[in-house]
Amino acid sequence: MVSRVLLQGKRATGVRATIDGVEADFDAAREVVLCGGAFNSPQLLELSGIGRRDVLAAAGVPLQHELPMVGENLSEHVYSPMMFRAKPEVSWNAQLSSPLRQAALGARWLLKRDGPLSTVTITAQAFAPAQAGGKDAELKIQVQQVTSPGNRGAGKIVLDDFPGITVASFQIRPRSRGHSHIANTDPKADPVMVSNHFTHPDDLQACLLALKMSRRVAAAGPMARLIEEEVRPGPKAASDEALTAYLRATGATAYHPVGTCRIGTDAVQSVVDPQLRVHGIQGLRVADCSVMPTIAATNTNAIAIVIGERAADFIAQAD
Ligand SMILES: Cc1cc2nc3c(=O)[nH]c(=O)nc-3n(C[C@H](O)[C@H](O)[C@H](O)COP(=O)(O)OP(=O)(O)OC[C@H]3O[C@@H](n4cnc5c(N)ncnc54)[C@H](O)[C@@H]3O)c2cc1C
Image (cartoon, rainbow, N blue to C red):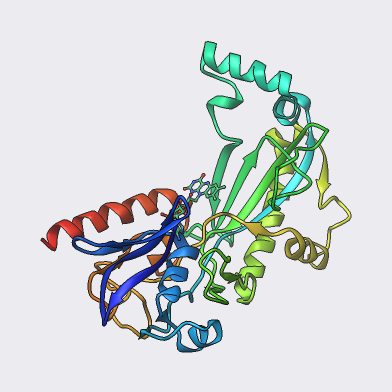
């Protein structure tokens, strides 16, 4: 585990890391590339003294290089699930919950290469504008053939003991921004992550629209034939107030955090330059989802891969 970037003045020369309980310093032959993801790359910069003056002072890390956007601009899609009791044949809750049935699914996949193990639990997705007639997609709806009372909380996911399907919705271009910063000098401590979801009023409205759209999708012809009743939040949550309360209580991470070391051309508004080099520090790049200046209107994994490819090009070109 890397605990910090080693600096000589304004040049990165390597990293300090602990491997099998032994801490050692590693010199970089050419440069250091951080790819710890949207939470850990800014954490490593801050542990190395690169970041906001106030954050580093509060955490007890001597300031080496002031960069005010480190750990700022955190952006994420909010995942808002509506869950329904459904016809048994369209729900995988039972099959995925029992070890015996899991074994049967494994055998089915081995023999026929089909069934739930040949895919993901999300079997349909749709993108839609927020307003009728709109041209740009703002919302995403996805159908999952499972339901869980725990939504996306920590720990093991337990599926419902009834046949259920989820119609989950997302606002794909959220405007709220949060932050993620260290609180002390311990590299093993999680940074303090503040998502600030719904702090931009457009976001709450968009997620509310998306939730209502989920309900309409579930009530429409083909889906309605597969669904028996809405379970979460349930038909009693009919008003905007009730749906907003449900959103606030259950809206969860979409696992797409980005933006905390954003790309830009100046050191006040951004952390890395368009070639992913940390402003003001030689020999140090960041190459992961943290560099996205704004969140992509879709899932983030393919973009993470492209960022890595671009970083490789930049490093090769720098020879
Ligand atoms: C449960 C889940 C489901 C997802 N599903 C999808 C999906 O279906 N489609 C999609 O497009 N995207 C999905 N994503 C998002 C996608 O995985 C991420 O956007 C992508 O992996 C981000 O890549 P990254 O390189 O920025 O960071 P990461 O993939 O998080 O890589 C960071 C790496 O750095 C390591 N690291 C961190 N700190 C240190 C340290 N101090 N020392 C050493 N190593 C360190 C971490 O262990 C990790 O391996 C999902 C994410 C999760 C968590």
